[in-house]
Length: 323
Image (cartoon, rainbow, N blue to C red; front, side, top):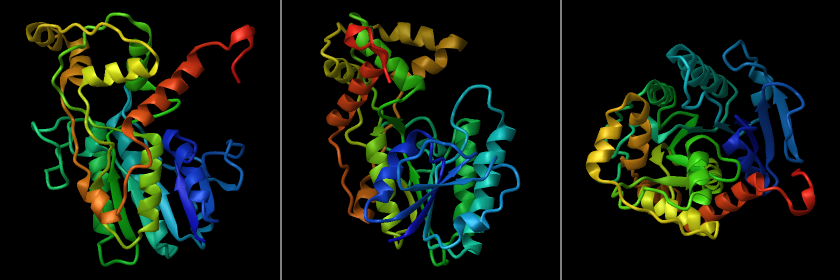
């Protein structure tokens, strides 16, 4: 049995991770901003306030074996580079220093593939490719990785594993994936056919399982990509999501010239890039180093995401309200 501390415990990934860490009798401590956060039975809450402020980590980390650091500002609009630096970098380094002082054995830091960039070079990215983040969010995650790697060398007392997941989906997903779910499950015609890109995804259940494995195998250190396989084109992803909802929309292809014209418009450039660009990763190194395989088939994971989305957006029969 181990005492495991988790930051970002009430977030999208954290809520999937906590039940897995409880298996085997582990003592799990969830770092939360304030008391009263809804947590699974058996998880202890540790209210610490704003992570960018002064935090007394000693009582939270006392007696802990491992720390999983999920907390951070996500990729979103209207977030300043200063705010990203404060939480994603400075607060992360302070927490790692406190973990060292408390004598922890393991730190698992969940970064992002965006620490490497937003595109793959006509083939899957591997850990050997240079990290060339393209926006302030990716730059903050990369800066945190570099700082942690310096603070926690492979032969040091606090072993470090950094995980770089791509887009995470699952029940309750928001932002870009939620928009794609809305299109795939409602529209009879979607001009998204014939797009030859490749984008990697990972389900929140699979990512939680990978993090748990990284906690358990504390002797393995390094930076690793982790994803479901294979990568999918936008066309294949939309068709898979629609089929899981019992729909079969018509997916006509748009001429490449039309995509190029749309990409030239400032308001559409980002959308077009996400729909037509590639961001494919190879996670063979993680699977080999940790002797790990995803707990879910990718199609099954996508089906679960769709079914959860439909439950959330479709009212129950008989006029009842959703819980």
